[in-house]
Image (tube, rainbow, N blue to C red; front, side, top):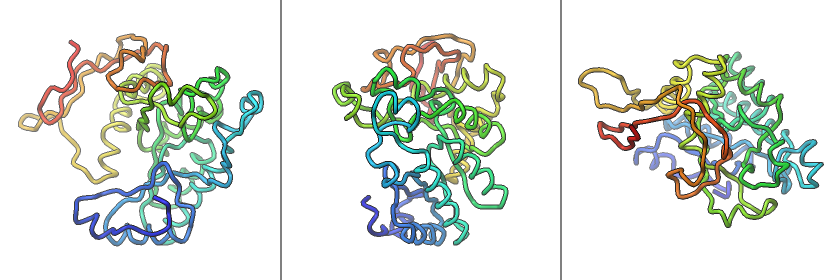
Length: 295
């Protein structure tokens, strides 16, 4: 995790590993990352990258821009994400390996991934609901629940992420679920980055993408259920007689308000607190067993 040496890819593969990552930390040494990509290709693994240049970040805690200047805090320049995103795709192309870009948040990264895909680079990527719904204006509250890494960006970035979802540049919607206790999030400037997202992800996607007419319901299923499994080489469940049930039953029109204290997670650091969503999961069936039921 210090990015100083490669792990044992052959043993990981033998143990059943299918994807490797130092997510939360970037691999700072480009040659080591290139070697890692060579090894993933040899062993049939997928590398997933947290794209961040720590020298550019230099202690920043939110998106660098008008709001960070207004608050008088160090910002995280978007160049940090864009630079490493470009690097990873260049390295992956050089060894003809697959690369997955984690939690895309910027217009620049989206554009570069779109271009790389058009050239045949084996790149896939993901984003999270807060990146296509919210902006750094929320940080004017000096509430650390709105701090994560990468950070909330601008209206322009939000639009670019939505467009990337619509045209297939962005393959997956994920949560980047990162729980923290209230005392950890108490101080705006020193709190750790991260927000919870498991119980709000489908509702957020339905609210911001489906009910606004941006994407179809089938597209949301593809982004949240099908593509992640396809990228990881996992079997895609079928709704078919004789198959094991792996289902979510949702009321796509139910309106509800996010009340963090009512979430099932032990941590309540939700970036969507107080927001009203349209669409709510009612039943979750996993491996044929009902795990959640509010009907």
